[in-house]
Length: 83
Image (cartoon, rainbow, N blue to C red; front, side):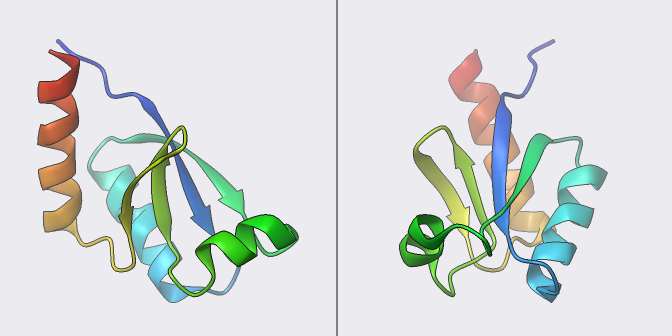
């Protein structure tokens, strides 16, 4: 069985879309590390209001509304990539 890679979820406290994304990621079995961008000027400049952002290393996979359907599609794509 293929394992999903460790992803990074860029978020801010109090962001309802970020909280929703974390719930969906947990429900779908993603492995991720949350990263609060609110104290990081460079990340805030990079992502601005486009959070949450889900990334694999430097590669942005998804941003904005991370619905269950978008995340399910991403999960399938990542599993295919990993073989």
